[in-house]
Image 1: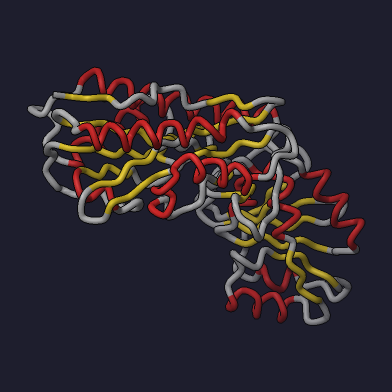
Image 2: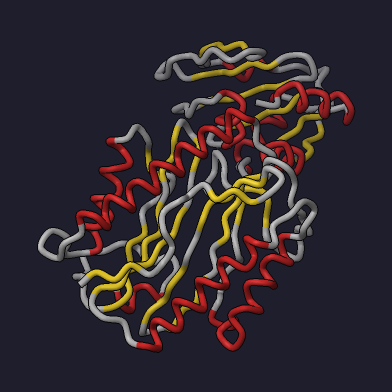
Length: 345
């Protein structure tokens, strides 16, 4: 991806070596492969992927590949290295100690922020892959609705299996474990899909395809039976709270302001919106940009992120609507399935 830009940063900051260790997602980003185990070493002028013999070497411009040897530590040792860039949120204490032994004179500095920044604005190739992942995700949902029958789909797992099978049959993997939550289970945002039987009430779906290492994320709501007026009122309110911030998406808009717009629409139910409005999407299902006061991030060209408000009533039900969006000068919704409440009788 943006290898040369990253190398320019290393040069500017006087960082002799960036040492990325498995399972750092930045290895996937730069190599466009998901290795069994690998180390990626990047200097201002070169890049080397040290790969397990279990994997086929990728062909990536600017990166040379070699297989890891038993004594790789000795081969990589270099007393001239004075400053090493690492990703602290991935690097284990054990490996940090190993690096200090290999490079005893080196200072370890965190390079997470620059990598997050580079990855947050997608290249045309990345946009194409996430668009494809989003298309497969949308098709899976549409197919589920068209084929749904309580004779075929009896449990949460039956629904999850259908969506996952569809995704895999269309050339993708799962972006994350599929969430299917029925009835009171839907009040738990990260409910673990179970063998719970489907019954009258809301059926919450949260799932996504991962196409060539790039993720999509979508949440939709089904209703089994006939919803009450209060249930329809809650859904309609949430629907508007999801549409309102999308309309306000524009360059340099604060992500936290979008969050506030959604909560304002929820009114007295805003206290039941217990998570952030969204997150960035890429090689990780959750990555920069972040919707938080601390991050203070604003919308930039070619960023891809989600909008996903939800309201939850513990012991009763919860509902969440989510789309994956591309900002290309305006908000483009990539997950195109209808968002109206689908009532299945």
